[in-house]
Image 1 (cartoon, rainbow, N blue to C red):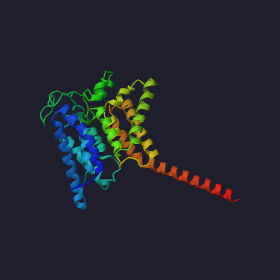
Image 2: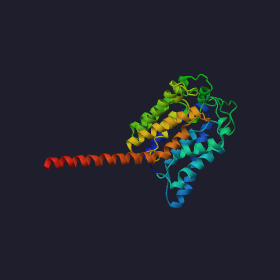
Image 3: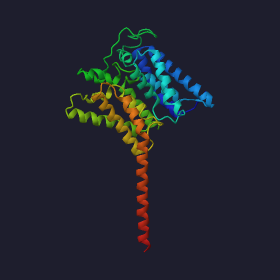
Image 4: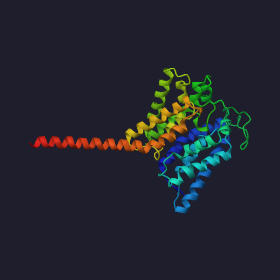
Length: 320
């Protein structure tokens, strides 16, 4: 039934420990969120591919997992299903399926529901407390809700535990819990040549550079450097900015692409009404990915042409 894609399977392996920790932190409801997201994603892609005589790609399992882990722990399941259907239908299949999409499907689905149902999702965060604690029923809302995510607390001038950000003991979206596990996943993905290190590093540098510049310039709304550990910044840098389909292919283009994503995240967080800016930054990066590749390719051609001219001139001098 599935088109075998070893690279996508390795991404799932990297996501597994993060998903397991999320189930422990927020309770069994997370499993149901993953099941709904994956089920809807596979169904929508199957219906499209069946007409073309194709198979469901294992990439849709990655999309479904990434999308589910970008949701708040108490996100209504119907919103999870709607966003995932949009992600596969509008951001992937309308472009022709796997390998042809311009935008990252998971982030497109996330942005669609976050804009459409901002109020509902904004009130769907709650504090982690171990398996079953504050988890409520599988289908209902948890009893102990809290919208005070670390980014929201930072924007209001509150203190946030750096250790909590590293280990995951704080509220937030399902997959952004532990910076430590995300860092370990990054090492694994780079070591297995599943993810391009230039994309990860340039995204981190872009975010850190702009954050430091605004902070030390005295911008009143600038967040401290700890904000890079909060929200989905690291999660997006490792798992979504490295998407091989929507990211640039040329090395210089990858550096510019990652830097742009990291920089835009900080600008959106600082100057907009949205406490998080990763979705907007990544979609903007996707928009310019092909242009970055074209600029890098044209520069390489000019360099090659110049080298050929120099070589031809040198050969002419030597023949005299």
